[in-house]
Image (cartoon, rainbow, N blue to C red; front, top):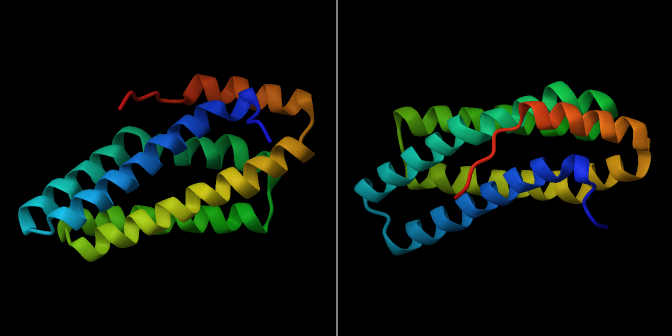
Length: 145
């Protein structure tokens, strides 16, 4: 299904998150030295601070309340887990933590795109989708990679 325009800003942020996962994993595979791990951890932390924190906030304050379910509760828990991994990367960067972060982030994004966004587009009224889109537009941070 094509992505509804109201959700496209969040899908763009998802794309950036998936790019972070691919680039981090590729770099770790080529060089798992402590220096590279520290550099990659810093990039993940920066991406979290620049874009992911904004993304999580928009979802939790604007999107999830419009479609509360067991899935949104699960996604909130994954947000907390991702935040916890970022906290660990701040104090003890490690390749295993980076791998755990990218794996969780990738799965989380896929779940939002394939399950949550599809359900929203199917079940939420056009009027509500448009209102959500306006609120998302007001809050979204756009980043060019």
